[in-house]
Structure formats: structure tokens, C-alpha cells
Image (cartoon, rainbow, N blue to C red):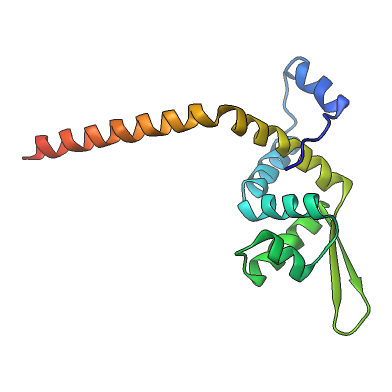
Length: 149
């Protein structure tokens, strides 16, 4: 994912004080967006369109890789519904459909870029923690087996 320049308005709000009251409508929206962004297909489609620009349906499927046509269709429709992609149907035979990120989709990609950078920065720490957790789990599994006998 390309590194995006931070949005000054978002950065100012992020660095400002935490609001005392949370708007329940915004909270529902944030939870909904996080659920969709956590979906790997949404992020892979977002990344493919960010890297390659406008893509036809079949090109998008190839750029994402290992996604069924049904899942690709469902995901780009949901992204279109949320205003993240623009779908353009060209009136030709056979049908020609293009997908492009909207400015809203580009801004979501920029936000995700922060997560990407965080993962790059902390990769070694996460791997160490995972190994330590696995080793501790194996030790507790052995002791549990010993206690059962």
C-alpha cells in the first residue's frame, strides 16, 4: 500500500482532546466500517485499485487473486454502496464494467496505510510475542496432560 500524506484535519482531531460524548450514530458507523475493512477482500480490492487505478472486473479479480466472482461482485457492490468505489458500465457488447476508487475510498486507503506502517514497524515484536505465546501454550498443554494422568 502506498504511503499517503496525512490529512491535516484528521491529524488535528486525532491529536486533540478525546471528546466527552460519543455520537451514537458515529459509533454505529465506525463499527460498521471497521467490520467491512476487517474483511480481507475489501482491503485487497482497495489496495489493487490504489496501485493500478481503474480496472475492469476481470482485471480486478486477477489483481486481487484467489477471489471468487461471487465474492468479488458482493464486495465491490458493498464498496460502491458505501461510496468507496465508482462503477462505470460502458454500453457495449460484451458488457464492459470499470471500477475506480472514489476520493472517499482513497482516504480510507490512506487511513489503512497507518495500520500497514504500524505492522511494518512492530512486525518483529509481534512475531516474538506469538512465539512466546505458542511456547507457553505448549508448556501448559503438557502440564495439563500430566495432571490428567
